[in-house]
Length: 404
Image 1 (cartoon, rainbow, N blue to C red):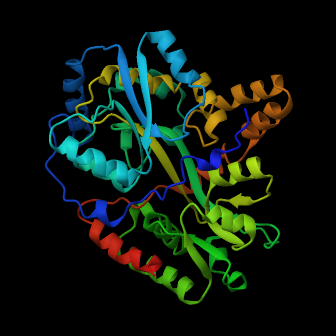
Image 2 (cartoon, helix red, strand yellow):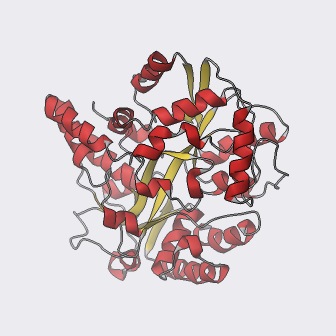
């Protein structure tokens, strides 16, 4: 299937809401959630007690981002045919911060949002939902397909060890993209974003979490284990880059148009955007994960507290870890799947297809932007962990970089 029009999808909104969400106070944990500070054993004990009391229902309510599933909903229809469970699917998430602002007052007042599954990106809102106890620990015994078919990087994630609260929906990588019309020597290093020969033509992202990671890569520090002292050093590097006139602009999703037109020559970029832009517009933009590292972000399926149909939710979550379902999803959205076996299924579909579908499926099946190598997985890192204790400090350090 062709993917023209996908640029109106998942990454259109600036993911980070920033000040309003960061300013929200943290409440006590709810009965059905488990605080992030709890040990794994405590969380598993709470989950076991919760799940023993749950019963099967005949429907499940799934809240997702726009254009972030196979268009015909074959994956959902097949689930209903196999289980008898009706799926009420809604595209109600525009960005993490606004969705969090919508559901947090409801959950904190002890009410259900109506959703059984929601898709949340790792980062500020993910961490806050866990810290507030507003998500239910998953029933690991119902994740048979996940434990069998998920790739190793997706079963061991720093922001949710043991996948207690979430499993991935899809992922992407923040790296460096360039327009080969203007950059003839392929970049390999974070330092290329500081190169004076590109002055006035470098794009950086406006999201503090994104630029923080790249500033930390620049000084050789893993964001996951970074300290406040490291943050100051990284911010100094980013301010030096800005003050020397190297940065043209701090972008949201609009960076992709600037790169395509030549306003920027080299930029921070999301892997999925580059793949989709080349596929839909015929451009030849290039992408690399720098040798110092890139950021891997993951959109995650989570069950909010007070979900009315949690057992059905667990069944649907695990359904997407059947390789054939993961393949259908990857063909449609073109982001990185956590199910490696999906690649062979897409390759086989490409071999049987014809015309534009054959070309598109072949591109998806073979793209290094969709299927990372083992070496690339070893170099990508998660965002800086943000908690109630370090949130104010983090934003006070990195927001001034993009201010004004």
